[in-house]
Image (cartoon, rainbow, N blue to C red; front, side, top):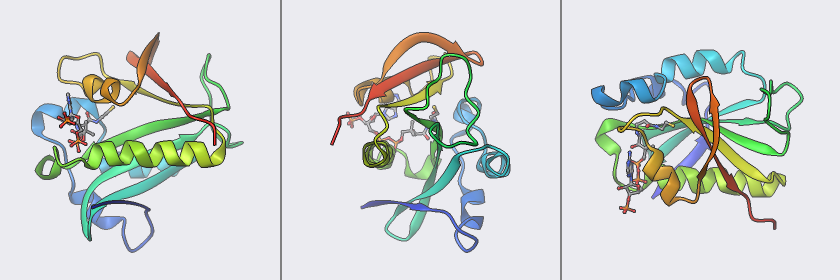
Length: 156
Ligand SMILES: CC(C)(COP(=O)(O)OP(=O)(O)OC[C@H]1O[C@@H](n2cnc3c(N)ncnc32)[C@H](O)[C@@H]1OP(=O)(O)O)[C@@H](O)C(=O)NCCC(=O)NCCS
């Protein structure tokens, strides 16, 4: 069963051993880069994704309601942003990615955010179908060359 847990000093290092397939390298930053950037990315929170006790992936969120979050034009404070999501090449296709999306949706709902947003590389190999199957839709906007996707959050 998939668990999603906030990273700490004792759990961060195994995240460095996780990587996507070589042909997916252009779709998401390496975990070492995400962890380094998170030090300077206001409002970011980084989680490990586990199958039981085995680390299988990384999820990074930015809560745009956080005072330190830096919003770009068109972005709004009522949004939870999925900044990074990766499942290690050896653990893809077992439902962990979908479980991580469900976790993000729970976080957004508990905090009263109205939508979840993210962006995907405009590429045939991208995870766009994965997100569309989970209710995300293109907004038509591009952010740093990537397609913005949004999914509304059901109110509690
Ligand atoms: C995209 C990713 C997070 C999905 O995680 P995962 O654990 O492999 O996906 P799941 O096993 O939860 O898949 C859920 C469903 O989505 C489908 N799916 C997963 N990745 C897909 C993709 N890239 N394209 C189309 N469908 C995909 C699965 O086949 C499955 O469908 P099913 O319910 O019909 O069986 C993972 O494959 C990954 O890390 N990819 C490389 C990095 C990346 O693209 N990250 C996203 C950056 S925006």
